[in-house]
Every structure is written in structure tokens, then in C-alpha cells.
Length: 434
Image (cartoon, rainbow, N blue to C red):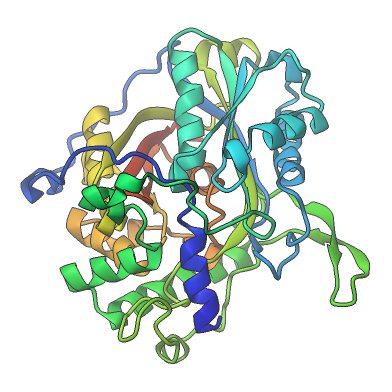
């Protein structure tokens, strides 16, 4: 990827200026891993469970198989697949929540169109949510909240993004009082510069970032070759325009950003993408991507009543605020908050799915929390797989629970990501065992 494309992709990640959530990182003493003392809780009829989840392959924005595919089609593909897989009547859904970043109004109109294209009746309500890179996970939290408060017993949480087709780079109308607040100004810092800030402030070297990126590519390539993603991916048949403008029908069935030939030598040759003398490159940053994911959630009693499978249990969710100029540190503070709510420690978790917005920030979070490297993104992360903004959080949930299912034993997993303008989100899931 060229230096200019790398710079452009940074702006792709900053779309809508959200109010900064107050709060500074707490002392590091609260973040130390404690000896494992967790026990698995007894199943409760009121548990919020994950029934099923699917995702599209992740396409390379502007160049891949989904470059001409509208987001409603991507979303419809996963909505349809999830309902068909578990043989659930669409009218049983109590609500749908869709995470999206780049579409106008968080994609509310687009998502409602996708609902109808999927055969879900108008009697089922839908909302759209934008918490930037955690939008897909926020959709999961929103549906879980509705189940917990008794509004309904079953709902669908989704995330979708077409970075190929969306209008990017414009944060919208900004107050003339912007100069009155350093924090407000920091909300407009390009994401790539926040990565450079993290690398410089916390001593994350270029070599360490490249090594992390290489590991992500190697893990993803291995997982792809072994078919580890096959159960979660919905192949999508779509139409692309070739260089001559001719339409061609193709089926996209695997993630397009995985590069098995990646080497440290190749990564070292890439120029800094965001500032002269920097350490963040196109090779150690997440990829600009297209994709969608859907997660079906239910109250345990309703899932059992309908004879639905139980893929996982949502044990906790947390979102925190951090300084906007180093927004990438968000998971280092969201993960402990979610673990505390679940009564767990770092040592109790088998898999951490931490979004790799940039290698710099992912490394900082992993090292800050003392997470063993083998527990982090065992199938690769966004550096290799891609980061379709609104989709990512839901995609991570699908990938996490499918990998825990593949392993077979009862275990906990965490999904987490940083959030532009200075936040972090995390959720703890339990896999009940085969």
C-alpha cells in the first residue's frame, strides 16, 4: 500500500465527532493480573446468551470483491444466514440493532432496507448505533440490555460497513468554540497520529510493531489455510465492475486481506504512513475494509423454549473514556472494567480478541495488562483480516465464540477495541463447553 493510501486510510477511521467521555486512566496497580480464582457461574434462566453468529468475508475496500456491493446487501446476507441456520421465524425477533459508522444517520435507513430484503417483517423494530470502532459490539450490548430489562426475549445485533462506497473523512459541522478545549481539538487528530503518539509516549518501537503485524498475518494465514473461519463465514455472491466498467458476477468466500507472504524484511521497507520519521505504516495498521456480521441473542429461557443452541453467554460489558490523543490505549482500561464486573482476572481468560487498529496501541494494551501473547488474537486480527469499522465488534464476537467452540472446553473470552475520540470497550463471554 502506498504512503498516500496509508494517510488516507487514517482519515477513514475518524468520521463523527462524539462527545468525550470524561475520565482518565486509573493507576496501573489496578491492572495487574491476579492468580486464577474464578469459577463458572450456574446457568440462570435470565442469562443473556448468544445463540448463533455469522459474518461475511472481509473485503479489501476499493479493490476487493465487495468494492461495488452496497452495505444493505452485505447486512442482508448475514441476517438471512443466521435466521436460516437456526430455523428461527423472523417475526420472533423483538428488536434489531445495527452498528455502523460511515453511513448517514449511522445507517438507519440502509439497515431497515436490509431487514426487509432479509424477509424480516415491518413489525420487528430496528435501531442503528454509532460508537465508532465499537459500534458492532455496542449493538450487542444494546440488544442484551433490552433482553435484560424485559423489553423482549430475543433480538439480533449486527455490524456493517462499506468503506468502499461511504463518504469518508468529513467529521461534519464543528463548533466555532473548538479552540476553547484541548480535548475537543484532540478529537480531530487523525487516527494514525494517535498511533504515533502511543508509540512515542510509551516506547513502542517500529521493530516491535512490525513483529506484531507479522504475527497477525501468520496467524491469520494459518487459520485460513486450516479452514478455521469456514463455520462463521457466509459466502456472498455479488457483482463487481472491472477496469473496463463491465459487470462480473463473483462469489467472495474468504477474507481478502490475509498476506501469507508477509516478512519482517518487507514490512521494514514500508515508509511511515502518517508522519515523517514515524513508526506507523500501512503494514502495521489495520486494513480499510468492507464487511458485515450478525449475532443472535436471547434470554436463556427463551432459547431453551425454542430449542435454540447456546453458543455463549454474555457475562459483562464495559465502556470507558481515555484521552483522545492516545485513544488506542482504550482496551487497557476497558478490559479490567469488564473483568471486574464479571468477577474475573486476566488469568481466567483463554482468548482476548483485541482489535488491531494499530500495532502500537494493541501492543501497549497487551503489555500493560500482562496478557500472554498466545492468548491474543490466535486467528489473527485486523492488521491481517481487516477492519470494517461498524462491523468489527460483531465480527470479533462471532470469531471468538466459534474458536472457543472449536477448542471444545468451557472457557472465557474477551472482545475489546479502542474507539476514536478517546474510548475503549470490552465484553466478557463464556463458552459453555461442547
